[in-house]
Length: 133
Image 1 (cartoon, rainbow, N blue to C red):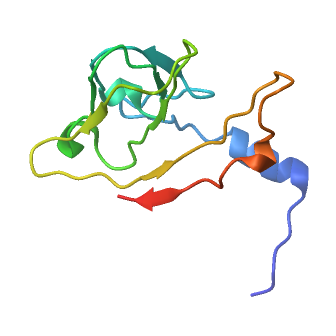
Image 2 (cartoon, one colour):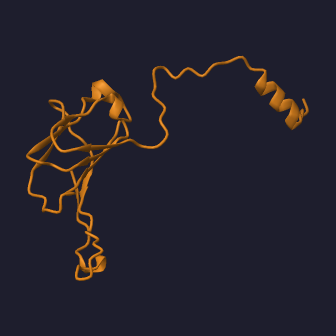
Image 3 (cartoon, helix red, strand yellow):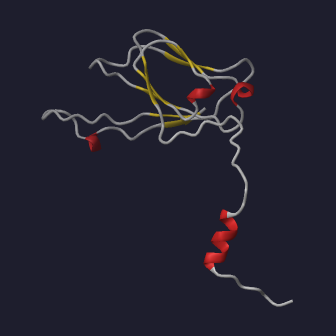
């Protein structure tokens, strides 16, 4: 048999003629990532998939991750520790997991960038330190 070529218009017509539906199976489609600000304990859920959690702890704080069985494969989040009140990071932030579960991630110290005239420049600060957990 020889090869049979068809044009673009015919290909488009064939694709448009398909009577199919895309079933998302209860999935949540979201453009962009959600930012959450927390100052106290917070329990994350399946709906927090992809969230960026900014934690400015007022006291010892627990960010509880959901269990793997509750969220399924591919669930992820980013947790950023901040100190937005001008002080120093003097509180403890714990990351909790379900019993017998562990998480993959890393800790990274971001350099402080200040706009005041007598502050240190970014290049004067120590390089970021990364620890694999």
